[in-house]
Amino acid sequence: MKKVGLVMRKIQFTEAQGPRIFADRLKQLCKEFGVDIVFISPERHVSGYDWIPGYEHEKGDLVNYDIVLDKIYSENIDHVIYTVSGFTYLKMFIENSVLFPHSFPDPALTGYEMMRPFYEIVDKAIVQTEYLKRELHTNFGVTDVSVIPIGFNERLASKHFDPSQVVDNRVLWIGRDEANRRPDLVLEYARRNPDKEVFMVFGGERYRESMKKYNIPDNVKLQFALTQDDIFALMNSAKVYWSCSKFDTFAMPLTEALAMGKMVVKPEHPCYDHISSTHSFSGNEKNWFELVNMAAASPNKVSMENRQYAFDKFTSEVMKQGYRDFFDQWLRK
Image 1 (tube, one colour):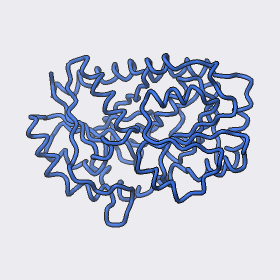
Image 2: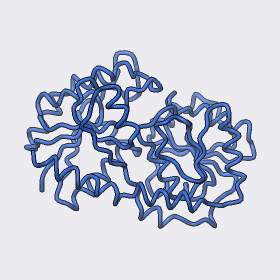
Image 3: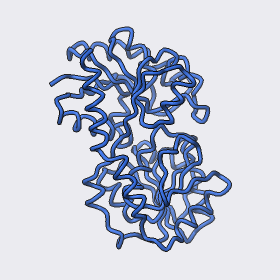
């Protein structure tokens, strides 16, 4: 099998959320066509939390290059996918290096100014949406960009799909305790709508501590570090899935929500344009609460249109074919 390194931060490998789920899925899918994805990360953390002064991630990643390169060389790897801009300089050492961004220098994100210099030297990328492909070209002049979505798990989407289990007043939100994700808005919605049962799911146990700073309404249920099985079972029971983030590179839970036939409420930012189906409603802070309530009041338990759209666009089979085609070209170098 041909080895390809996947470079992510240590904390991304350890938490039960997007980057780790992507890594596991990529490793499994690529194994089916002869590519061994080798996980590589620094042993030392930059910080356990985001954007603590003096520990900004991109700058901190630079001090970890020795560890990362030692691991790459010890595995005799000459093709590398890296997911954070702080490792952009890998191309100085490994010619065949490609960026797969889990974040992006958009003004909606904290620390975007710090990301920009790293993106100035990107020459090849895999992105999850056409929006990001356009942004890389417009803002950084990157023309060698492949679009491959992160596929959801069809087995789990089939196993847990049961419209009879939908709770009509249940609203689900999945995110992190970060300003970009706006958990404060979800808590305020719950306060104003005590008739709704609001589930807030966080990918890591560290958020159990950080959420203590909030006054949590009685109708909010907090969940931490759930398995993918647990996520799909909970998602099946919700009537509405709501995302209120300022920006996402892909928004994996939104595609899973579509696959589970949820009524979806999302931001109107163009980075979410790929989440576009019959019962996906775009809004902002001025009308989100009303949109969530309207979605909850829908006479439909589920949206079969949303489910079909997701199965057409975002399955793991779509992801697998995308990477098969990409590696057929890239690994010849």
